[in-house]
Amino acid sequence: MTREELAEQHMRDAWGTVLGSEEGRAVIWSILQATFLFDQTHVGDALDGFRAGMREVGLQVVRNRIQPAGFDVLGTLQREAAERADRFTLAAKDFNQDEDFIDE
Image 1 (cartoon, rainbow, N blue to C red):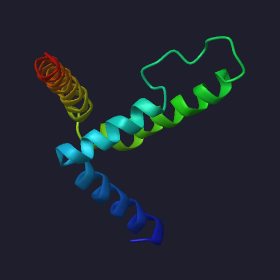
Image 2: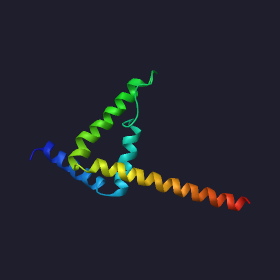
Image 3: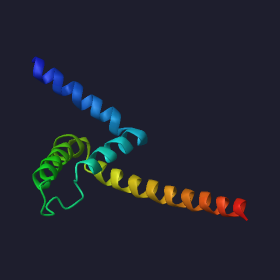
Image 4: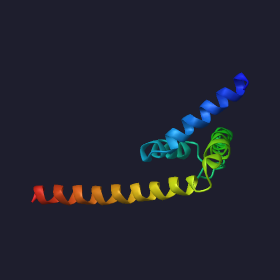
């Protein structure tokens, strides 16, 4: 193997490790969200080009690292993100109800 092939194999293995845990997938999801992957990048201001460039980085991560890891990985990321959001919503609601009870 060449040096480049060894480096690429190492990166595939590293991504496999990260994507192999729920915590790792949560980190990757937060990175993808930061790249405007799921948002409109053109809003008519000076940052349009910046957001478009960030989105391209997110697309490259999906295309070059997530999709090769398995056809279902992106769906798993999305499902787990939705489940986390639901858990956080319920936890916040419970927390706020507890606060209301204390205030009474």
